[in-house]
Image (cartoon, rainbow, N blue to C red; front, side):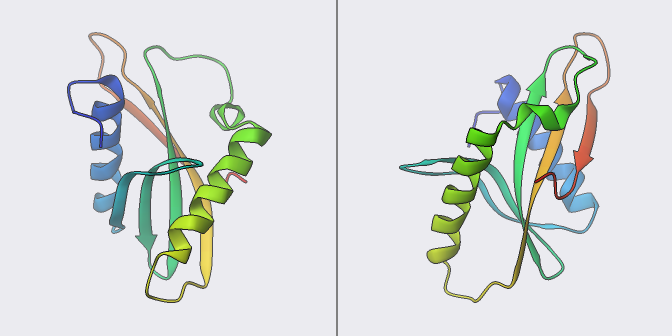
Length: 118
């Protein structure tokens, strides 16, 4: 897990709060293995959500989902499969979500959350 003093750590903390307020259970933070890292893993009812947290310091006109290139999608899928293989309980449904966090100086943080981005 990133220390909360870093931008990534601040963004992760905000997204964890956002997800728990929405009724999701956080299963893992910054889970790493040899092939990659997943920012957050959460349970939403009977769905396991693998959440990529994207942090920016200013608002842009880019579509946040474009931050996940095809190579990044492949790496996230491989990493998710390794995490799932290590779990004792069976899993049935998964999805890949994106949390876009803007941490601009002197402004309130903005969170946009997208489910099933790929």
